[in-house]
Image (cartoon, rainbow, N blue to C red):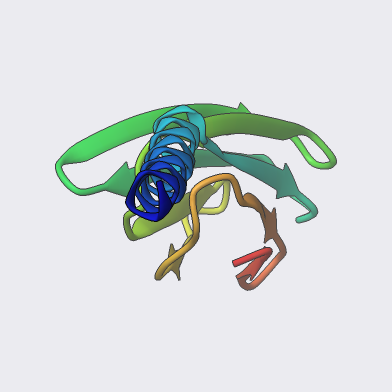
Length: 116
């Protein structure tokens, strides 16, 4: 009977471990990182996001306007802002955890990244 009881506890422990791993894996698959790009500069900018071999045009943002997008993968993201005056500013989000909320604030001379 002691062997049976020990086996049941091991089986239960393995089952709990298995369920935990499955729930964690599913959460990773469902997790998305949310990016918000906010134009705090004095002029309109055209914003592009690049990651791995993907490129997404985020569009033209007037001052105080924002746009959001999400990614389902954890990778380096490069943001590019082209100002109406012809100047270009870039910023790189080097790494982030899935499920993060990243805010990129475009200023007159730079792009600030918060929430890595």
